[in-house]
Each structure stands twice: as structure tokens, then as C-alpha cells.
Length: 122
Image (cartoon, rainbow, N blue to C red; front, top):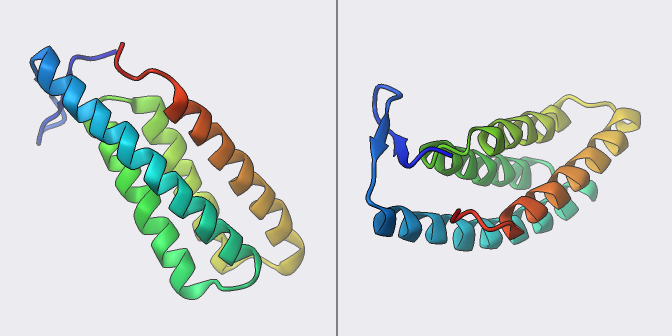
């Protein structure tokens, strides 16, 4: 794992271990809060409340993706990008395909929870 965060030109910016540990701690704490929001929003999306809930879901997933990328958690950032796309696809999904998409969103959120439970500090 890289010891820096992404700079403006995509180059990692080196951080001292204490600063990185603080940033990772914030990422995990906020990630857990955001995961709960994503789960709540996913439940709203299942009931057909697509407009506002879908926008909020995308905003939260996008923010997590950016934070993961900034901390050089590239795989997590890619997975969050896929989650964004998966949820965004609900806009145009037919009812029959929407159920499968909702299932995949649930699985993705479960995987995100497992990832956040890992010790990111190492």
C-alpha cells in the first residue's frame, strides 16, 4: 500500500505516518457512517423512491470513492465506482431487471462493510 495520497497530477503525495493514520481513521469512521446511509437509501430505492434517494446514494458513493482514491486504496475506489454505476443504472432499469440490480447493490454494500472492518492502518 502506498504511503501517500493522490496529488493534483495523480502523483502520490508523501505523508508522515501520524498524518496518514489520522486520515485513514477519519476515512474508516466516515465510511462506516456513510455505509449506514447507503443501506438506508438502498432500502428506499427498493420501495420505488428513486429520485432523491438515488441522487443521495450516488453522492455518498462518489465521495467515498474519492476518499479511497486519495488514500491510494485503488481497488476500493474501483469497487465504489462500480457501485455508483450499479445504482445509477436503476434510473433506466425495467422492473424485472431492477430486482437483480437491487440484489447486487446489497451484496456490494456487504462487501464494503467487510472492507471497512479490515484494519486499513497497516
